[in-house]
Length: 94
Image (cartoon, rainbow, N blue to C red; front, side):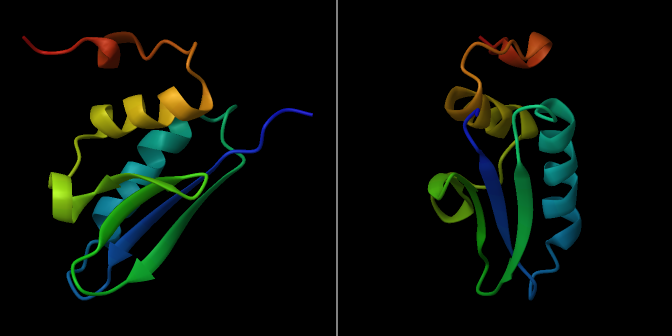
């Protein structure tokens, strides 16, 4: 059996960040359709926007601002499929 990987995106309902969370979820599910077993959206309050992989916080808006999808994809990839190429998303801007 392969490893089971779960991603959770917790977003602020007061701030109406569901569309942003859903868009990021779609990006991650499209990129990691074979590697992720579950992706959940968790309603929260107080300005929260946190991405967790297997219960580990990989992105917190309070510390890092809103994430670019490519940054989150790299963080998720490093935990669930380190060998996977992300194509143009792997290139960093100089």
